[in-house]
Image (cartoon, rainbow, N blue to C red; front, side):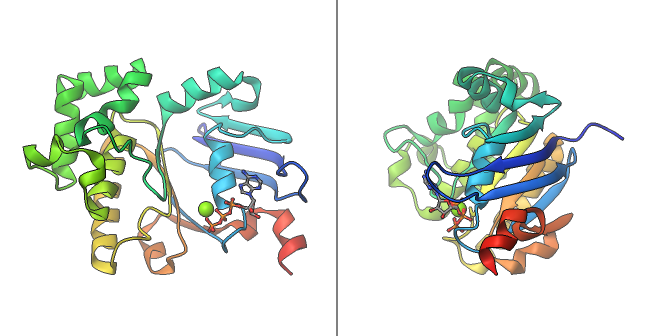
Length: 236
Ligand SMILES: Nc1ncnc2c1ncn2[C@@H]1O[C@H](COP(=O)(O)OP(=O)(O)OP(=O)(O)O)[C@@H](O)[C@H]1O
Ligand SMILES: [Mg+2]
């Protein structure tokens, strides 16, 4: 079997002072795969994404990303590993309001030499990489690229967040309900752009959403309750 992009086994997690939230015997995400993960509000989707990104540490079990055991790394080393290999699109986009569009997109390349090197190799410079990605995502106007991120529409912010996640070709793109603020047409158009960019970069996409209408676009669909034994205990 080829190496999984993500491989979880025997994962257990509880927020301090709370009942077990996640109990996941096994889960794999393959290189290049697009996965749609759904689950009710409060079921632990964002928590799981945080564990995969190495933001939180599980109470037990193993999380391998690209063969690297995340639980064996110090918090600082996990942060570096995450920024090298994972692009994250947050539900609220988390753009830095006082930075320009371009500066926001280039941010991961300031924290990761690997991503800066990949962006430069593919596009000649980090600047050119940002311009090209934003253009693919439909943001071409130079005036928009120098505008502060807090002066953008929601749809524009979302595309900037996607470009920031994609720059420097991380192997894993995680998207946590990134389409909830868009209408149906804009949603599907955005997903198609995201797929095209992930495919070109060979990235896997782990996409969390409540919106079942998007599910058929993905290689695989999964509900968190199918993975999570703790859900059976709490949701029935
Ligand atoms: N930092 C935290 N400290 C303590 N409990 C938390 C924390 N973050 C989340 N939780 C709890 O963990 C549970 C799962 O939350 P999580 O955000 O992972 O759910 P979700 O599936 O992403 O929900 P939604 O669809 O609403 O985004 C909830 O009961 C929540 O209150
Ligand atoms: Mg959530």
